[in-house]
Length: 265
Image (cartoon, rainbow, N blue to C red; front, side, top):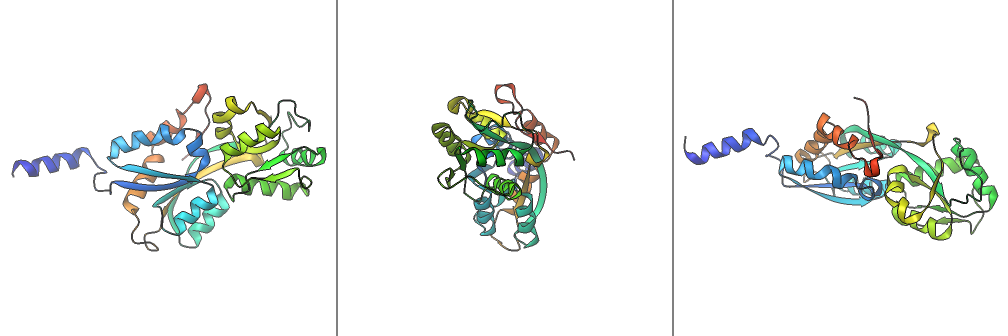
């Protein structure tokens, strides 16, 4: 056995993921990127596997569309009904639960709609609509946008014309806009935490079980798109749901606050 063969065998022994391609394309929601979670998670994965994860951060609808078209290898999103449909239609495979956080209603500290402290998000939405204050919607077919629309449907109302602004923007931009207009918005807690200092918005409604926000990761089906890096996608899925990956998620605590929680296995 020559020296080169020994080196190759040694590298395989200490790098169990070495067979994967060098780049994994991940579509994901703005919350995982804007919160800083991916910057906390991915370097550890990349160092361990010798791969590079190329992140495309968009709303959940767009993230799933990129996966549907085979433009990425794996997707990390938070809209369970849409995820299940994506898998059922044959576009995705190997879906796993990853983590959860929650939605909150954020708004001006003066709280002109007087919803602070409510734990009933649907009642709070009715109050906001009746109060005549502005509400900024993402309007981008994201997981947050879908959840917000479900609340308005349950509320049976919506703010009057001119008071409801569909921004078509990511969560960070919407929080900035809400601060500028002294308006209310629905946001995931993680992105709110990342933007709290610069916007000055307050958490006004939280704690309703309807505001539970789980995340799932799905590989693009190689039977549908043979050119995808399925091996790399599966490697990322296995790592992020492993004890090591889950511990990294739990240890993400900007300003000492845990923003994402591993889902029980």
